[in-house]
Every structure is written in C-alpha cells, then in structure tokens.
Length: 470
Image (cartoon, rainbow, N blue to C red; front, side, top):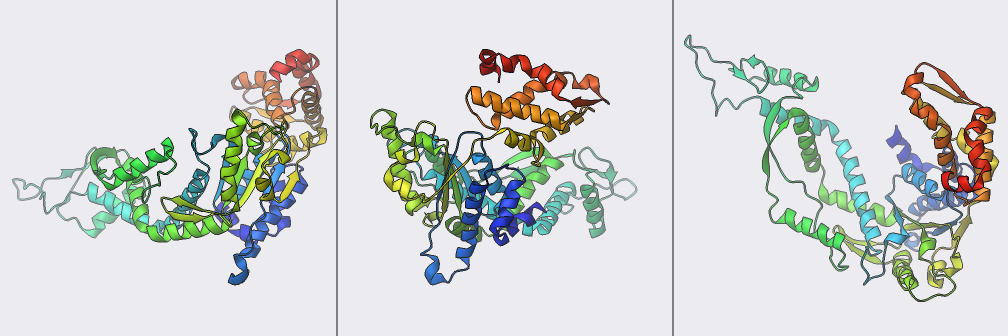
C-alpha cells in the first residue's frame, strides 16, 4: 500500500501534495506551497516535447526560518512521498578541495547510490516469486543428500539405512522423488528446519559495480575504491556453517542479485537521478560568511560555496556507475540564518536559488496543533509507548493548551528552538509516570492542567533553572 502511494506522487497536483504534508507538519503553508509547485513542475517537465524539455531547469529553493519550525521535517516527508532519488545532506560536513573532509561532489555520488538501491529493490520485488522458489530449491538441495555421490548403505535384510539430516528425524531417502522434495518444501515454508545447521559456500558480498574515482583524495572515497578493487581481484568464497534461517537470508540476497540485470539497473538509476533527483542541503547558513570576513574559517566556507556552485548550475560528476549530469537535479537548501543572512552567500550561489520562502515562528496555537493533530503527534507517541506497559495515558485539551503555553513562554524567554522544546517539556512532564509505569498496569492516567502545573511550574517560574533543564 505504501509503495502504491509513492508511485502515485507523479500524479498528485500541488493541493494534494500540500494535503499530505499537512498530516505531519503544522502551519508553514507558504513553504509547503512552494515545495509542492516545485515537485509538480518536475512532473510537468517530463511531459514536455523533447526539444524544449532540456531547456527547462528546476527552480531551486532556499527555506529560511529558525530552528524547530519544520524545515527538516518537510524534507523528511518529501523523501517518503517521492519515488524519486532523494538525499538530505548537511552543508557543514563538506570542505573545500584541498582541506581534509568530504568534497561536495560526494553528495551526487551518494544520490546515485540511493537511486541504484531503489531501482534494484523494485526490480527484485518484481521477481520475488521466482527468487523465493530458487532459494527453496537450494535449501532442499542442502537438506537432501546427493544419492548418486553418497548412496545409502545397505542393511542386512537388503534394505537401505535411514539418512539423518543434521538435528532432524531419520527419513527414507532411497527414492528422492519430486513428492519428497515437495514435502520438504512445505516443511521449509512452515519453518520446521529453521534451526537446523548446514554447511554452505557463501561468496563475499560485492560493495558496488566498477571503481570509484579517487581524484578527491578523500579517505572515505579511497576506501570505497580499495573495496571495489578487492572485489575484482579475489574476494574468495568461504565455507560456513549456518542455520537454515540464516542460509535463507544469504541465498535470498544472492538470488536477488542474479535476478536483476545490473546494466538495466544502472541505466534506470542514472535516468532517475539526472531527471528527477532531489538534493536537500541543510544548514546552508553555516557556510555563509559574516560581514564580509575573509579570514579563518570563512575561507573554507566560501570555498565550499564555490565548489557547490557548479554542481547547482549543472556539471558532470564522475561516479562508479558513470558520469552524472546535475543540470536537472532539484536543490532545496535550508538554514536558520540567525547570525548570517542569505545575502552573505556568494552572489552566484544566491542566483542559483531563485525561490525563497520564509518559515514563521511557532506560536501557542501552533504548539497546540502540533501536540494534537499530526499522525505522529508526540502525545500519541507517549500514549502508545505507555500502552505497552498497560497504562492508558490521556491528555485533556486544557492540559495540551497549558503545555503549549509553557513551550511558547520558555522559547520567548530563552533560546527559541521551536517545536523541539516540546520534546524536553513532555519528557520532564511524564518522567515520573514513565519511571513507575510498570507498577501502574491496568490504570488510566489523565493529564490535566493541574498535573502540568504541578510538574513544571517551579522550573518555568525559575528562569535560571529553566535555562538548564528546559
């Protein structure tokens, strides 16, 4: 069902995309609309005649807003909604070429890696029934001896001795007929052999196809390249003793690999990456310079911006799967911009992010809706967690309103961390209940405004204390 929902994203109009985001993200309507239009434009571009299609470039977006207002959550939900290759990266983990760290081109290599895994999984699922049959056949071959090479010993009366499968009951294998194999197949499907041990020959798993380019000199990429070289020059198969349960997993992986055409996987993944790929760059404000400074860490920050620029503009990046053109990949950047401003980014990079959307600070009513409406609301999470201990926790609307007021008050008087403040407050509010939940099994606990004030008032009223605890 989830897979079917993902495939339908290409058919969603912007209003439907916004409606899906509304299930998990409160407010920020302007940002949702901007994202929805950008996603829909990619579907529209696919329908254009080939002559004009390559001329339509994606309109990259910068989301500006304080921490905890939903920027990263929007990215997470886009990833789950979209059946396109999607990667979320932190701008701060990249360094300028020549410095120790990851170069910015690695984000495209990672995006292509995600696309390869996505396509491989889809193609393997299409062959699931065939793969399952092959795995069962291999397991049956392990359980049934090869009678031609190891014929059963004769008994005194002219019969044959029973052959015992490791850990199992004796069976007469003098005639290994198809019906016998089918009996074993049914027993395998019922899990009766799962704990039996067998000896298998397992090939070392390949890390990828081809050899990664080592031009960046970064340690992680060099290590990947060495792994690829190892897979070419002698990752020998080893004999191992494993249970049938584990053997099924190993054989399943091997048969999945065999069932898909690797060339088709790479071609399809490359097409998806280039035409529908999405890169979400978080914390982009951390690589923006401040007040025109050009010394110290700002040198490296501006270097990262200069390295990101050609990738956003459109360039060709070498990967182990071939050359990837980034011209039509959609880039969405986000940052709080507390210290720096979007104008502190180098002008060329600013020009490559034509759409800017500002996310609003959260107010008391927003906190109330966050605690009550989303499908993954934190109050619902705590209800389900404590339900596992037999405790039924219920929150009254007045209690939720009081929690919202406290969250807004603490954000106003100390550092504003947005909706993340709710996690701290809720954990402190339910600390005693969580600790003694096992002793309250079978009871119903109602959280009221009085309970909230009793647990939190002293800390909220003491601002010095709230700075450390809340």
